[in-house]
Length: 348
Ligand code: MRU
Image 1: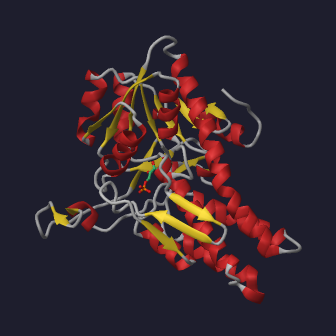
Image 2: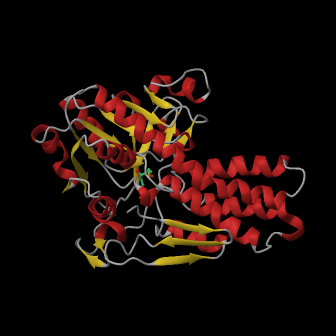
Image 3: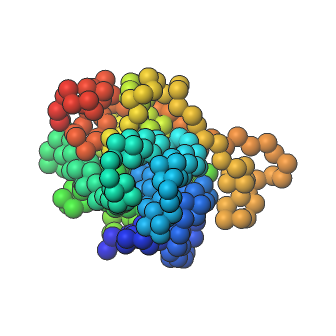
């Protein structure tokens, strides 16, 4: 069974409301760009690739309903601009918006149909990219341990729920499991919003992965005591020098991995890469509401009145990405990424 975060048939979009998981399975109808923006902002749908796909599909739904009229280009531009502002750190939505605008402006006839087609193909492209990431990542990790099964530690949720399907870092885990080479997955709870405890644990149980939940504060200990073969995480934005923004807590995992000599991998499609930024210092980090830290499911867990700092992401410096960056083009060292993405270097 594979979980479906996004259900789309031409003109109709539903998303699995991830705020209600793991306790309730409810699909919400997305009828407009406004609905798409709200679902992304409130994190009913989250994960960099899924954010872009749902954002763009919400536009496709409106275009299929005939919105845009005579001022189609303007309508598409304003919609994409609005959707991109919902969550600033993940680059996928901004990147899709840029490519879609270029496509829209160059398209001479039947703009509406062309744009809708471009958007609807995103689902298939993402699943295909993820399967390649899974395969490349699994092979690369297994090449270091030719005969053994492996133990992977991951953070946040990067699976079917965060993508069009299969997943990125969790896609690598899925591929290892399919090869019967996954001994165990350790997934962090991922405070403050618990994507690991709520979503990765849920996916792992649903997919039958041998998996163990730990709190974020147990990760270094797990590396010392539990024979972690590799840490594999996703990315919201990988920039030109390989610095990577991902869910807050990723940075400290990379430091702990370095200390324990555990290879640290980032798994991300090229749609999560942003060569326009030189280094991680240039990445805008989204800050989320204090309540996401001071309460869990509406139940307060912190002393009332305390000040809160709640950045949703942190940046892992490229020097700590020791295993490599796993893309649909192959596995690359951070220093090789630019050449790989611009076609000057090929796989593995
Ligand atoms: O705040 P979230 O849940 O959207 O953060 C998600 C992550 O940080 C993921 O690791 C990243 O988007 C990659 S998802 C394939």
